[in-house]
Amino acid sequence: MKSVAPALFLAVVTVISALPAHAQQHDVPTAEDAIAAGREIYRRCAGCHSLLPGENKTGPTLYGLFGREAGSVEDYDYSSALRRAEIVWTPETLDAFLAAPFRVVPGMKMIYGGVQRPEDRANLIAFLQNVLAEPPAAVAEVVEEAAEADGPPTTPARILETDPSLAAGYIPDVRYTLKTGIAEGRMVFIGVGGAIDGVVNPTLTATEGEVVQITLINGEGAVHDIAFEEQNIRSQRLLGSGASTTVAFRAGSAGESVYFCTIPGHRESGMEGRFVVTAPAPPGPVAEEEEEVGSIVSLDPTAVPPPIDWREPKRVKVELKSVELTGILADGTTYQYWTFNGTVPGPFIRVRVGDTVELTLANDIDSSMVHSIDLHAVTGPGGGATHTQVDPGDEKRIEFKALKPGLYVYHCATPMVAHHIANGMYGLILVEPEEGLPPVDHEFYVMQGEIYTHGTFGETGTQEFSVDKLLNEDAEYVVFNGTVGALTTEHPMHVRVGETVRIFFGVGGPNYTSSFHVIGEIFDKVYEWGDLVSPAAQSIQTVSVPPGGSVVAEFTLDVPGRYLLVDHALSRVERGLVGFLVAEGEENPEIYKAYSPAAEGSGH
Image 1 (tube, rainbow, N blue to C red):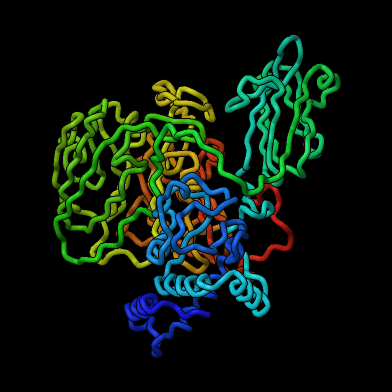
Image 2 (spheres, rainbow, N blue to C red):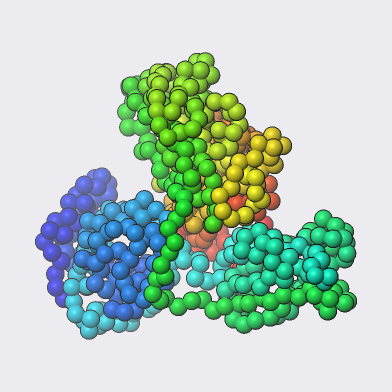
């Protein structure tokens, strides 16, 4: 085997020597030590990434990694985000990626939280540089020796998507809505929303193992139900016009079957459609994609500035810009957002009690509206909004003293205020107490808001704002961080078992109160209403957060798996409100042990 490059070995030693004294080893590590340690770290990756040429697994092969462009392995179906990343893999770029994958490549599909410790990253890179410098036969020999010595690599608990039996029962993979009706003199099912909207007896599709949810609406008043032949599923009967129900099941083996109404005579009268289950597509050439028609506006929840490292008050400059843009609200759906700095929520502002904050608000020259900012942390007229009504192309500045510690909401306060907030103009400002906050392993920034579209939930195309729905508090979408999928497909959160988590949570609103809850966890500490002065409440299951309010929740992940962030007004999950927090690590049977595979439904 070739030894690791001297420059890389020096980097390993430098990283370790930079650790706090209590974390350093007494003996200077050798290159062989680094490679051996890196090999153990690689075992976490081996379930998804092979070292052998041409052997793609859940992830692409790592053979030939260094010097290769990201997204260039043949016969692997990359996400569009990774293909567009314009990264050439070097030890330096790989280190940056391993430290914060979703910051380096926002929107990638890989469920991976990175390697947090710098020395672990350096060791892993040392191992990869060493082993990948060998010819394929030698690499295969190393892989075979490792398998014989250690047994098969442990599949990371994070890769839940590869095992449908572990999928969270709360969230279906595929949703369809059907409405009973009359067409061409026959009783039929009619598709509602998305690609099947208005289609008579539409063909419904799913992939093997996917959880399918069907909503059935009675459209004309006769008694109806729906059954899926091969799945042995039948809904309850709907007795009157406007009644509705849902069923959920896991798609079985690939093939074609039918769905139909079981009421005598109805199937024969036309109430029958096709249900097609397909096998997962093998990796293949990447199809050309249509150009995206909107921007990704959802803010990565890891975008939290580091804790305050000073203890004396100081002057802090904050610059914000109001930006109006067309953003991707959901798959196939766009919306005209109004934002601070182009994201929803706006940037997380972090200051210390006693600081003097100099805030400049600019309004993009292409804006169509006047915008402003009201910070709940401000003692002054309108929370600053009175003096920050900014015309397009202009900017204004205010200065305020951060008088009281706490977690506060800020938002636009230009009439109609609720309209500006609903379009995405809200965020959080943290005023840390003098002594700061206790250290934790991860801090996340999450906000809940509503979007009031003229079209119904799931309708594709560009959706326009509805004043009537806003005033009636009848939101079509309820979301975390601005969009459907913001915290599931775009920015899922990742931690390791045993790590501590702090969530800065706020409700932009403008109307709904949130019953914030993490399914499968208990909050160790909750600083209610954003209060950082009073003692924290402890052992809390669900916390109520009003619009314009906030909370700080802290907990430790003891068991690996995927945890769901929800509002426990759980019908809002169907409006897009859910987030994923994925914990990787060893099982902990003393705390939680399963005696059977995960069920299709939930036990919560």
